[in-house]
Image 1 (cartoon, rainbow, N blue to C red):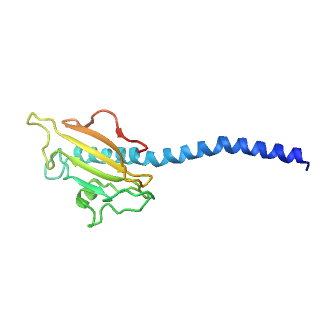
Image 2 (cartoon, rainbow, N blue to C red; image 1 turned 90 degrees about the horizontal axis):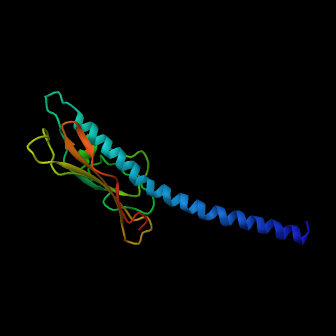
Image 3 (spheres, rainbow, N blue to C red; image 1 turned 30 degrees about the horizontal axis):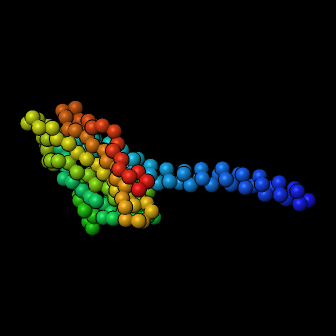
Length: 170
């Protein structure tokens, strides 16, 4: 192989890397961020199902008390967390909702209804629930925050606007 061929090969390799590396890094960052929105959607779906359940004792429109943040601090590296472990804040509520991520998490999750118990619909005041994820993906102490909200009604938990994001990539 001649010197010109080696130079041409290195030039082509450099071009491929110049295109691939930034795209790869962007993909990794998007994958880290997508965890929060996916798990908040799952959490709100589980709370909606719980709220829509008619219990054997005739109670309806129920929600468990608030839970989280779980884990107490977000992590840079993904960590396996048992949300139903007694050491977790609000473990009974996580267990009642059936919320347990099936993969390691980087974000800290919270579930916060403004009221809990049963028969939460009626009385004139609108009741709401917020689902929050906070993360520190680069470990600098500055957190990003994702929040989804829902309003309680006789037809179920109604999504209240779009996903709110503060400092997506901190």
